Length: 152
Image (cartoon, rainbow, N blue to C red; front, side):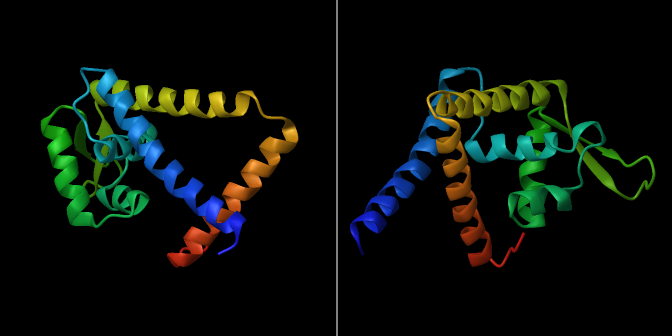
């Protein structure tokens, strides 16, 4: 491996681990949040369904987990007051999962965290650096999607 490849590999591993650690730390510092990162991301996936909510299948697909895994996680978060299930207005056989008021507060906190993170990263970058960063991360993401068989 050449010097660039070794440095890139090291940075990618560090960035991945640090993002998870920083997100966990932010949750802990918020104090009253007793959620794992995975639970936080499930709330985020539900929140993307806005007011109409999302089906369990849509949530599972968005998170790349199985439907039974999503069902168990949703039930736990429902019992804790973050989510609620209701029948679809158009098709009563379909169940939609939505955020409760408590779930919306957590989702907003998480969105604000991400907004602050990207704003802080972009602060000292020139337009050219921003363009290069987006292009590079876009290529990385494309490689990962293709490796998973998910061409987008």
